[in-house]
Image (cartoon, rainbow, N blue to C red; front, top):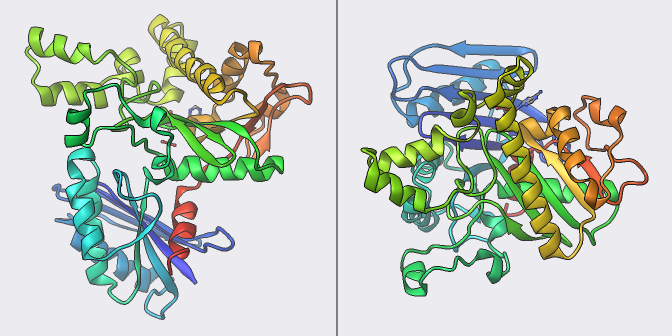
Length: 391
Ligand code: AMP
């Protein structure tokens, strides 16, 4: 039995058919530019990739075409082979501490949580609604990015904001990327053969976040009410004095939506260098661009600051794991971060660090006081496995 994992964005649908036992991705694809004048759909099964380049007016048409592609290119979904459809949902608020079987009331809750996840929840809901209509006989499960952090200790989740205001507007640290942090911290325990670990997971992709996990339970996350807080990201500021918003609102001609866009899309590496892809930033730095080198320093400084803070709050540190695009592939970044962590007794093996691999691995020396791991994340597999727990 397989699970169809769906991640709907505002103008895209990414999907993967996953075997939750072996972890294999049986088929995958994406629908892009939904609602625009030119659309694009790509479906891959085995060696075959089929592309369609017609406009896709809405999520419903997009998903209908994807289901047709499953029948045309394979594998057929009509023979009862899928056990569940797993939907990624970014914001579960205070209501979901694990996956949820989707019924009308869960849909309604995801809808009501849209103010806390305005960039994501409405898009997820559009995908969920059409998928339930098109695949009515299969259970649909919502897997929330915030669920792993729902059990954060209150002292880590609470902002020092007026209680009444915080309660009324449901303001607290929800975190994000939780499915990845949950999966990767579990794989780290497996790799080290220990559950009793004080570990830090660094999810360094276009979005970036850090978490602290003690004995399998999340105790800290760098992302906050929204995924804007924390580390320097491809296009997001991460931590910034909130008074910068007041300052810009009072003194610039930017509207609140423009400031939102500035902080969420035009800042981070992009704001500092013009590029949001870490590879491009390295290229610029290698060519002598001082802004790019400074951006790398700001990025690494922020990371090390979080690692120090998390080691202090956990009262120890056994392992740091690098994951996601830059975490898995950027050996120079890992080497520079490790060098900045010499105080913690961190020592990596340069040869092991430079190996490119899809395997979970320990790149630290036997003498290192902290295990330094590289573990590929696999959110689709994690969503598939969580979905199977409910069906
Ligand atoms: P993700 O969001 O996990 O897909 O990660 C995407 C980001 O990973 C890209 O924007 C790049 O910045 C980064 N990335 C991917 N491959 C590499 C690489 N070989 N070296 C440095 N960064 C990389």
